[in-house]
Image (cartoon, rainbow, N blue to C red; front, side, top):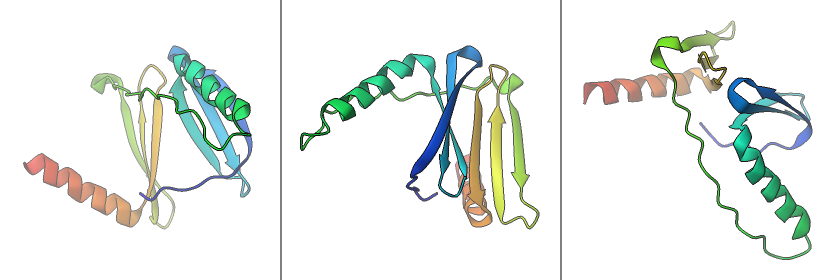
Length: 125
């Protein structure tokens, strides 16, 4: 999938189960983007914003170390769904586990086909 640059016009946040934060970002076309991250990362996020505010007059920003969040799903309790729009041009692969972690991947039909080929290649090796 290609990276997409988003220019938020508004956002909302809420806490979910197991100390997760859901950040909903809306762009100017009112499309919604969901970002989930652990509550413990709020300290890092706060530090980043403080750096941006505190050093915005300087030419360089201080670098902040970011800890990658790796979510481990419980295979027995994870629901997996593949959804599509009516003309099957866009698909959504959704994973949700019993703790409330919800990951949604949107992709075009071509991207899904390429993803399927990669899965088959890995499964054969």
